[in-house]
Image 1 (cartoon, one colour):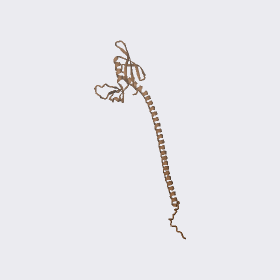
Image 2: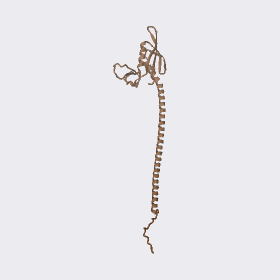
Image 3: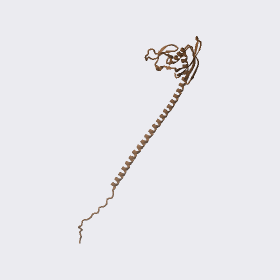
Image 4: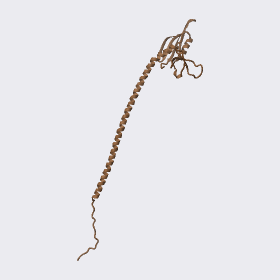
Amino acid sequence: MIRINLYPHKTVRKKKTPGLGALVAIIACGLASFGGNYMYLSDKEDEYKSLQQTVRKQKQEIDELNRAIGKVKTFQEEKTKIEEQLKVLKELEQGRSGPVKMLDALATAVPKHVWLSSLKEKDLAVTLAAEATSNEDISQFMKALKETVWTPGGIGRVLPNLTGTDAPPRVELLPSGEMREFEQKEISYFFQNIELGRTSSRGDGSATTVSFTLSFQVNYAI
């Protein structure tokens, strides 16, 4: 007898194994990831090289600036040395010409009836001893010392302002006697702080001699 099985037939599904397409996809993903990492690292390497180049360039600029600063420092040192040398030369020049001009100015200021007997100078302070025929001659000498000046035209005597205005000072240049006007800033006084020391008279009524001393400050910077 033939038996027929009428129950539903169960089919068993076979498990699928990865095929060639899946393998290709995996390899493609790996290559893509590798390529992305390679591009990233390549960009970073280029950026690193660019930074290195920038650092080298900045270091060169810093070195150039340091050399320039060194040159400026050397220039400043040389400038300072030259200025000190010029200052010494100026002081020597003043020391050479100052006393000469002072003696010329002093000789110009001495009146006819005054005779100098001694002259001492220390620290720009001068003390002199002299003789005169009268006290009026001493007063005239002190007045002449006070008015004796140095101008762009040479040694002169400041004339009193008789107008009472603010006109520029008038100076009588010596020994020519020429009258000129100068700005106040152009006039330098030789003698200052003029003080009369001791005085003594000797002689009879017809011929009297007055001995005296004077002290004053001298301007050698002229």
